Image (tube, rainbow, N blue to C red; front, side, top):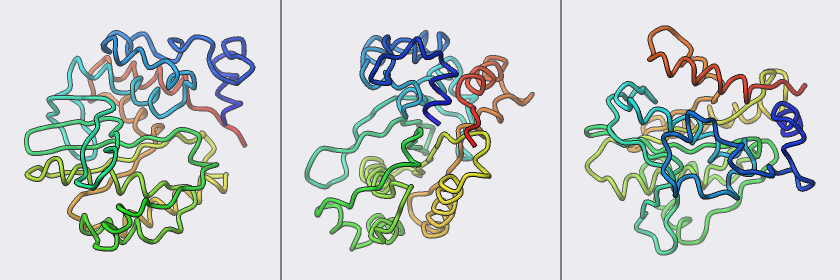
Length: 251
């Protein structure tokens, strides 16, 4: 998939290491316009234009012009969209980074994104301090899933830490984790993608009644939703631009 995306972007933009020569090429102009200098300066993270960070910045920075009209995971009326927010978990160590934190009155949504790495990864085990929390099933429902430890493509440990961080940081809000993943146009014919989907459905069943909700969606599905008639004009254009940039077939 990375090879197909590189060809879509133009091989001449990439160095011998397979990364962009100019990290700013990873950002859509309409996204860069809504990002502050600090958000644009993390060049190394943007040298792969299909990284989780690039996908989130390109998809959601333009929504800062109308956050109240964005609808995600059944939530709307957002007032703030913040990228790469560290949220404490109550566990010793460096707090996890939430790729996108979207807040509405009484609601908090933590967005975890993944690019092509999901199809090659082998998720790591929980650190001992987090493993103890999972053994106590904290937050309720998520601990069981994280403790299972037999995930192949889904990094359940990351999702668990974000769910824990949301519950600890925002104890009075209704919290949800949204998992967004990039997949090829022909995902329905590719076994790694199918396995990834099965793991997502398994996690959704496991945490169906959890105190921190869980929703999953592909970026492709999200962008298609934005191309519908009942979204702002800029969102329809954004969805089309993102699909033209990232939706490729690899089979």
